[in-house]
Image (cartoon, rainbow, N blue to C red; front, top):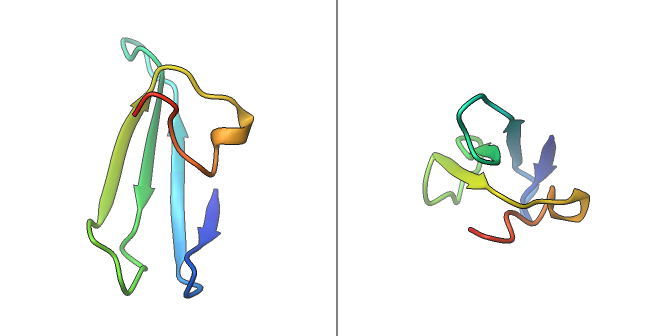
Amino acid sequence: MIRPTVEGDPILTYYRASPGVDGIEVMSDNTADRFRGEDFDYQVCTSIDATQLTTGCRDA
């Protein structure tokens, strides 16, 4: 999923289900964001629904 920042810079987010991971891995590539803090964000969401695909984990 690609979504823009407020300034219009693209943020690319990957969602992955993997064996041995209790939930969904969410990885965001912030390298194109001119005002970024971290280059990459990583979370494991143990409970997520479709409304959270742009807002992040309920349990993070």
